[in-house]
Length: 265
Image 1 (tube, rainbow, N blue to C red):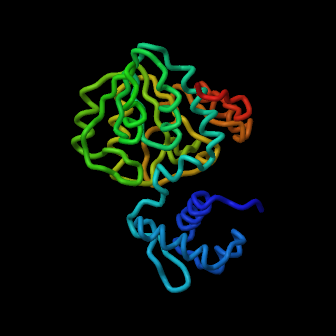
Image 2: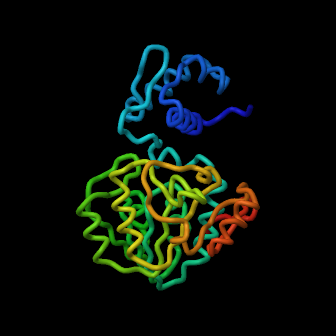
């Protein structure tokens, strides 16, 4: 097993906690082939961010808390696939468009690919995405208000929802933590869901960006059925048969290949 980056290892630990609600230092050390000291450091960092609660010999999931690492730390996880998806996404955006760009690490990569577009209006509820355009003269940025959801650096809640209902855009581009043929688009953080639904009302054209790790998962709250998506952009690790079943549901599916990514200018 190739050594994992700390961020990758911690994300896998959180995935294990979603399923079993508790983990031990011994089992994590054996699974990831690292020392007990390394695992204890991982658990301490996750506890400091409120994702887990330390317990004797391991950790348990924090009741009601998010189980996703902070967006900034996820930027390098699956990076080559996220960059490929981002580059494919920017091919759908024209100069002069008005778009909504949602929170997430993949959408942050999309933002980095869009900084050279001209006469572009970007509406977002994500502070890190707004910051990507801070030095770009040709892009107008509109940021919603709201309550700061720190793991995603996103603004959610009643104020954000009201602001989103005041704006219409040509295209909505969002990431999503879970996609399932049966359950559609789902989210694991209930307070974020109403904001997600308000975002979908901004345009009929919905572009969902999701790497292969998001497929086959079902979280606790429904955001929208699969058919609400106009275009799904993913990477080449998703099974062909699954993509064909998604296309049969009427979605336009684009498969991005990391080896074809061009260096950003």
